[in-house]
Length: 108
Length: 108
DNA sequence: CAGTATCCATGATGATACTG
DNA sequence: CAGTATCATCATGGATACTG
Image 1 (tube, chains in turn blue, red, orange, yellow):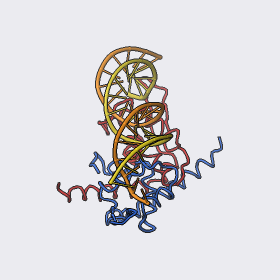
Image 2 (tube, each protein chain N blue to C red):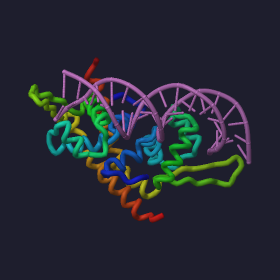
Image 3 (tube, rainbow over the protein chains, first blue to last red):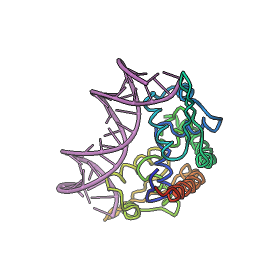
Image 4 (cartoon, helix red, strand yellow):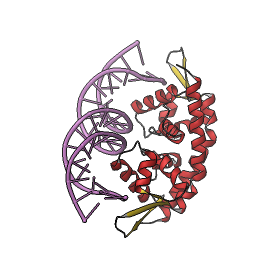
């Protein structure tokens, strides 16, 4: 996460990565394994998923827990900071619905 | 604006462009001329500003009004849809401050 | 299972100069 | 004043194959 000129840019730059918002949204429902997330989103390549998860971890929004088992098991969960932005994401979600209504409304 | 798999992606994809959030934030303060916006942001090239404004206009968030004068005068204002997302941007702004606090707190 | 490695295509962004 | 045109660069995203 990098500080920008304006806090709103800081925020956007942190969550604008491919499907990042949706990933966080899913983690609000509970911890998830890597494979679960790939299956839940299903339109993201493994390489991209790995990248987004690493960035979210580096930005302090999610935790990565490795269970020393065979076969390997890795779970992702939200950090306190990640949980704190839940209201923001919910508001954005509603904003997205507003936009989609607008798209449907302007049949061109 | 393009409908995505999840409304939150629709929203993010619409506002993630370079400084778009800040541009909208400024327009909440009142209508602005092209040159004013460039001066207000000052870290964005004219080419980029033009591009962001065009995209915002195409997405139905802002209006572009040309005054047939010499020298030319163009003003940008928010549409109803643009005004409707004010609460969302305010929430994101607060989220950005939260993130910046987190950055300052983890002195590494 | 949970990733990495590699290569490639595309889009985003930037600097500079020019125009009605 | 409010852009546009052009060129160049860098980040983002994707497909596929491989690994502990």
